[in-house]
Image (cartoon, rainbow, N blue to C red; front, top):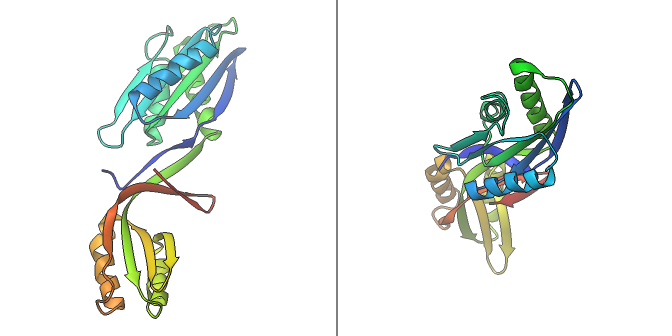
Length: 216
C-alpha cells in the first residue's frame, strides 16, 4: 500500500467552449471499475442528446487500472487527452466524463485535444482534491501525569489524534505514518519510562479537510 496518493473527495462540473462546441466535464470519485462504468453509463443517459460522452478513469494507487474512451471522436483526441491530464496530476480513484455538444464547426485533431484537456482541467478546478495518507492506528493507555508529555510530542511531530478518552486513565488513539512506526514506539517508551506501550489496532487511509479528519 502506498503511504500517500492524491484523489478526489468531492467531484465537480466544469465547462469549456471552443467555436460554439460546449464541453462539459463531470468529475466523480470512484473506488472500483464497476463504479466508474456506472457513472459513465448514467451520464450518457443524462446527456443522451450530446454528440459525444468521452471518458477516462484511473483506479488504484499501486499498478493502477487506466481506461479511456473516445466515444466516436477521432482516435486519441478525447479519451487519451483526458487520461493524460489525470495521470499528469497524479490522481487516482476517479472518473471523468467530458460531454460534447457540437457547435457546427470541426475543430481538427489539435483543437479536440485542447478542448477535452481544457474541459477536464475545468472539472478538476471545481472538485475537491485531497491527499489520502496511510496511517497506523495506535492506542496508548497512560496516566494523567504523563499525558502532557505524550501530547506535546505528538503535536511536535504533527501526528493525528483521533480520540482521547479520560476515565481513571487516559486512552489516546493516534495515527502515525508507517515509516515512523518504530520511532514512535521507541519515543513513547522513553517519555513514559516504559510504562506506556503503544498498541497497533490496524491501519487506515485518512485526510485532513477544513480542520476535520476523514477516514476511508
